[in-house]
Amino acid sequence: MDLEAIQRALRGAGIDGWLFYDFHNRDAIAHKILQIDTSRFTSRRWFYYIPARGEPHKVVHSIEPWRLDHLPGRKHVYLPWQQLHAILREILAGASKVAMQYSPMNHIPYVSVVDAGTVDLIRSFGVEVVSSADLVGQFEARLDRRGYESHLRASEALHKVRARTFEEVSRRIQRGQRPTEFEVQRYMREQMRAEGLTWDDGPIVAVNAHAADPHFEPTEQNCSPIQPGDLLLVDLWGKTKEPGSIYADITWVGFIGDEVPERLIYLFGIVRQARETAVMFLEDRFHAGQPVHGWEVDDACRRVIEDAGFGRYFIHRTGHSIGTEVHGNGVNIDNLETKDERLILPGCCFSIEPGIYLPEEGIGIRSEIDVFIHEDGQVEVTGPVQDQIVPIPG
Image 1 (tube, helix red, strand yellow):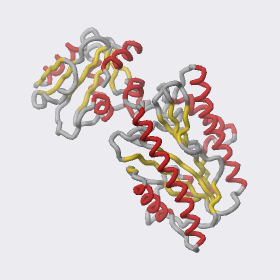
Image 2 (cartoon, helix red, strand yellow):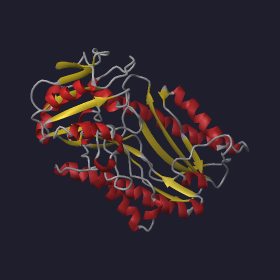
Image 3 (tube, one colour):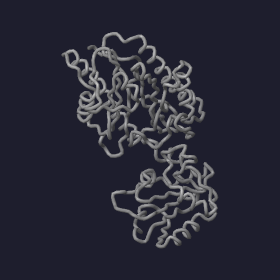
């Protein structure tokens, strides 16, 4: 934890302090920023208050007084709840505005962690509670050099797996087989393990109408065979096994056959233009030194698809934060599911993945790239970019 940097950020934002709170290891954001070891059993509430100026305060229960010993600051130990309230009132005296993992109207669910009752408690001391969302983006979601390089390694491995998968599908079909989505997913998992990757679930392997379901995942029961004339979508994500490694997340589409139908070419062209528009919007803003928020990039991307008449078929946000989890706690590229008003900062990594989903036509097309913002404002697309639907000989 960089205490001086956090306090500078608080002063710059006009916030009197950042109040961390946890119970039963619910706040993973606090754990990461404060570098808390959650492997040791803990069962009582704790608070950690970083004022904009001065010494931090640790508030811990008498049964677990060791909980925050690794952090700087004055320790306060409580036993009855009345004593806890008195300590909090004391350490917050003089503060008019403090940040917590809270989001007004739950606009940003990723940082909406603190329960309503605890927010009520802090407000009862005459303190305004504001969202820590931008602070989280600055101190939890930004990648250091090591994280960035691990993301690049994961991206390289995923693209190898993606290329091998299309080749393997082609080989099996040319042998007269009809591999199912589930069988291809199993092959992809084998290849991902061989590349030294780890991941929680997936990948997505989907043909035709299944590709029109953005979160389709094949099973032995629901899978379809892959055969000539099919649209094939693969969405895969993973990270290396080193501690603190960062995910990569990509989606590509192919067509089983030598000649891609004009309808698919047309739809992919719209998705590609939307994706490129989002990247250019980011580049223009950072080149001009102007701030840019997640919702603005979503608007720029979505407008392309809306202008083409397919707006209601783009049924998810444009992109999500990427970190040690595939869906990280940083800014999302979103003005659909939420209005993400957080700033996109240097060090951020996120996906851009516009799509058009036409289940009645048995079509789902998505193109997903990952973007990293360097400290100098350079906007880097990490990994190869799909420019056209890949013909897969069958």
